[in-house]
Image (cartoon, rainbow, N blue to C red):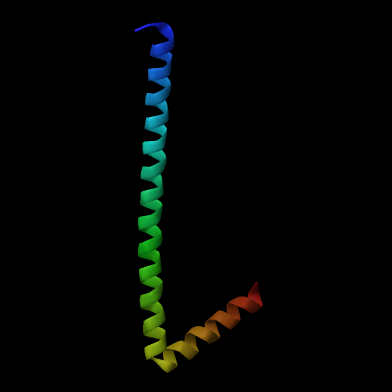
Length: 68
């Protein structure tokens, strides 16, 4: 293997490693987002099923808006 072939091989390996790392990071982020969305849907369902709890939540939310 000559020098140019070795460099090309090293570049290809480096790119493959970077791609793997980036895709792995992306997969973890996607999994976390999916889990967060599932939890948010669950909270929304709970609030929708209990009017008193929903009103309490909205009251607290409005107080937070006033502070910010």
